Image (cartoon, rainbow, N blue to C red; front, side):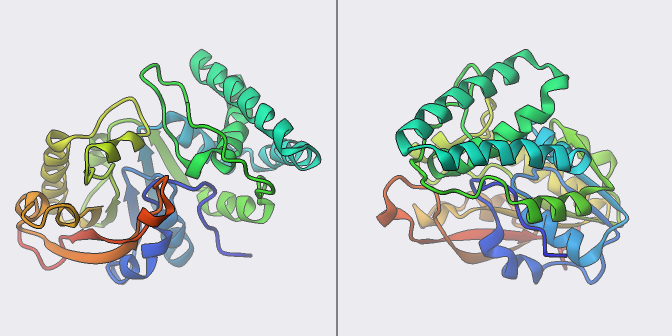
Length: 297
């Protein structure tokens, strides 16, 4: 079986930093928790390498978690729907596909608003389709909660990666999935748990904040609350690794995270900036890996 990898492109996805993150894994992982699962690069890596007995993933994005659930519970039917979409997309002109994208985006938003759970399979198929055909794979919603990212003019995207979807489904079989506030993961986390925390990043500039993928912002107040949560689960004995942006990329005197995580080990690692409308600005920047290994609480 092939190795499972993220089934969507996700802002802040960790595929490119996996080598550095792997160095922070405990030698064994029997219990794993990811309170902000996102695209799941670390999740699939941990599931494939360690096969933990108990796993909890969570995200505030209800539609993302629905897609994980459909891949876990309804994979072959999801593949059938995506194959149908892919076959139509491949048979049409780019202009026709642009119209098709906006038609499907409208349908997705209808399903998102009406909340009919009998349509969760179609909604998951549309979630993946829109991710593969929208600008930069962004997931962004407006103030009404409607997905509003434009078409990316992709000529031949892989809309239905059957092999990877089946590999993901196999690994997700025993994974518990929740939608909601990351703090609700606290009851699951104990001294046997490895926790990877990849929250919405603190924006380096005000304009960078546009990539918010839920209606709820994640400002400095929320970053401080998350820091308190990480301290709390560290005191339980959990092994914790967290990621975030490095404010020093924009202002070398900005010590926000250095102060917030003064009791933790902070490492700066180089990463590519993937989301920018200007390709010349997708250069290398530092990100933070924050670990509680060898820290005292």
